[in-house]
Length: 212
Image 1 (tube, rainbow, N blue to C red):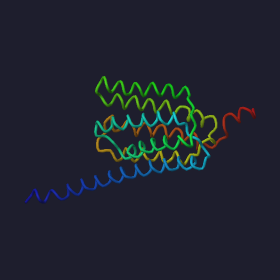
Image 2: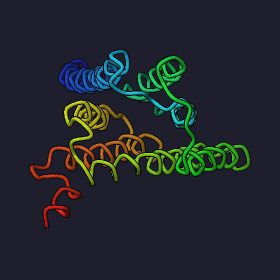
Image 3: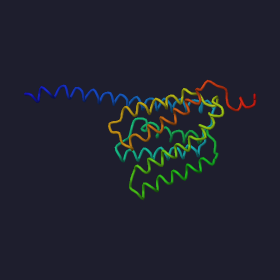
Image 4: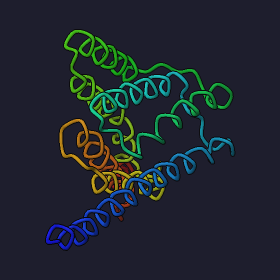
């Protein structure tokens, strides 16, 4: 009798926690999808042209990252959406994009190769996750440099979707280990940097220098 009296409060609390995390899981996927849609619209309007080869590298990198997370049972809602969207963008860029190879693409290609090789030799998904995060950070470098020079080159609100998604992802986690935390924390930091640079209330640095 005593056991039956104690179980309902415990079950109710646990159910409430699971519902909260499930809500955050689904919401992170929705914000991730919203960010992708916002990125797709200017492409179809022919206002921007994605680089096909660059997005092939990004898609492969995201896939490796997702596979590493799956191997550690750490897949989240944001990655569940991002990977298919990345490959969809590769397909879209075949028609609306441009074929251009940069030095950053070369560095990212080597980093992606290291992610695959390290996983094959070490049998450790964490190494692939780490190299994928490094690749993503390197690949984001040109965008950061671009908005640092001229914040008007990007709109802040599409990046805001990408900022909210990893926050919700962190709240949705059921285990706090490297495999589950690395991706949302890395995405959160990178997105926050870009949003801060784009939304800052000041004129482009290049313009200031010319006026002086």
